[in-house]
Image (cartoon, rainbow over all chains, first blue to last red; front, side, top):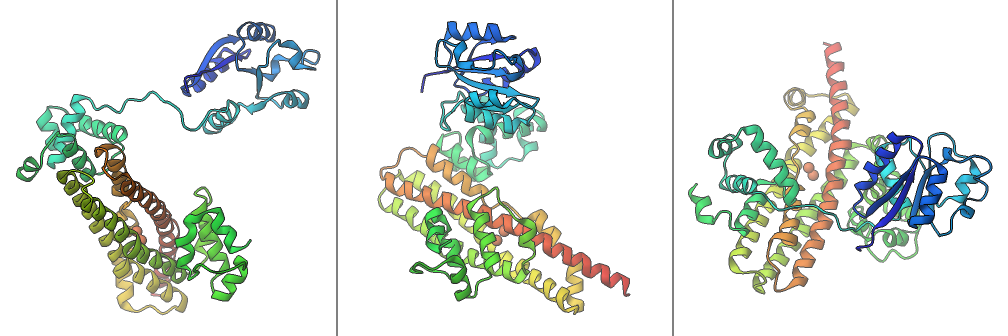
Length: 198
Length: 240
Ligand SMILES: [Fe+2]
Ligand SMILES: [Fe+2]
């Protein structure tokens, strides 16, 4: 799944463009290749760059240029219209998908994922490698230390210990102390004799 | 809808319908007929299986309309399932890993001791609910319905509100969650993958079931009993 989904965005408002970009960039398969603030430029960019999708605000269109949208393009771009005022039925009917951008973030993400046909299983860039500091904290947890003891041993504040613990749980997907102990044993951050002696 | 269609829709509902005394071989009978025949509260049954099937569907207020007795009865059957079926099955599979030397000895020991910890935790949790929490919940309901409060119960109510139990109702799914990830990610590849796969499938199923179970305890049974406690204590205060 190395193919990226190429998108051109078109909206009069720089704020909306920026917001959309932010939201869509969270989906790792997305490549936003151009942004346009008017319909003519959007059409030219689509014809030049052949994106997979054009996401445009329906308010960029008027009665005359909205009659037959496909006639503007020399390629098969999928049209996704966004709207914050009621969208004219004839525009909606010509689009692959229409999204109300006044909805909440969760709704928006859901709708865009649907519209862009993003598969559920994707390659995401995320690191689950523990830092050396985090490894040291895991070792202390496995030895049975309290947050206070860990803070004293590693010369950091308890606050920092708690922050480390949160990250560790997130990275490893292990929630309990016994679970972390197993992790530490399997990765030789600690051995059974040490645990028994501590 | 026919009962057979319910199972085709979601086979994970099998142990759930078993708890209502429905076992396989029910033919082409409808859900309604079968409940009538088996003397099962149809509305309760439907709410329970729907909530189990679809996590986003949780008719809290509807479920709270059913008697504590009915709810507790269902929860107890689930407990039996966990202690007598799910946990021993997983234990047996882990034993199979040992027999087959599927991991090196040291890792098998780590796995076994982690699982034993989990087993003790869930057993204690359930025993406490069976011996203290559920009987108390049923007692409160009886008192509420018959307007008949003995001093012992009133004392208990003053000292031990259901609210405390909610606050300390610990999460028995966490270790299960960890166990899954230990097997999936952190143990080195097993010699016998099939056994490890089977363990994981059982763990996923048990986790789902426990989530549903705790949700009924925390969002249905406890709030219902807390409401009754309050109303009894209010009544007593007024009629002193
Ligand atoms: Fe329980
Ligand atoms: Fe519980």
